Image (cartoon, rainbow, N blue to C red; front, side, top):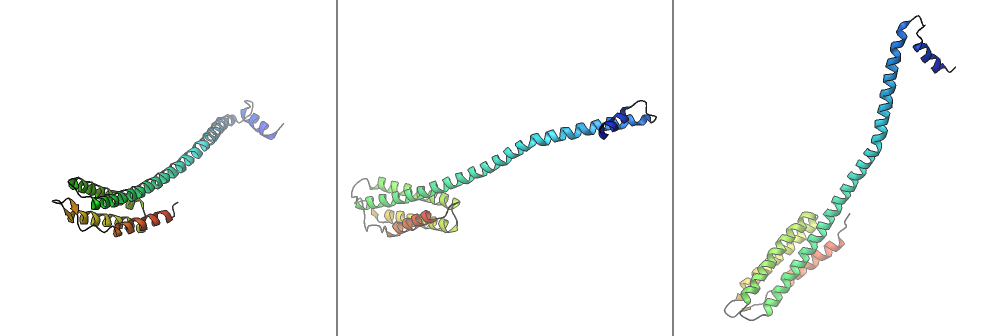
Length: 184
């Protein structure tokens, strides 16, 4: 007979002179049950822990992707609104007529959009791009102010014509920096 079988048999044998042998048998079965239960719980929790780690990694990657998307959209929105402001000012500079106040209103609205999009781009960008976004916003403010200040509402024209070089340069510098910016 195997040794383990003999040991258990002796522990359960009621004919043994030492009657205290039956008490450890109860303890052994409790220990075996506890160990078996713990092994089952540990074995069942391994896939759950693995899934939890994978889900956390996926959530982190999704947050990173969302941040990247927001950054791209904010930069594109800034470029679009700055270019739209530049175009509206150039068109208003060529216009002579009674609708100049409506055109100036559109210019002020575009300038406000540039400010908002510059702030948004600066939130998601590094220091250098944030500074360039601020440069675009400042050039937009100067251009809008120049267009409004140089407008003669009685004649319905802008004279002298606003200088578009500063905003054109700031848009170009920002665009080049965004395109060359290494993103994770």
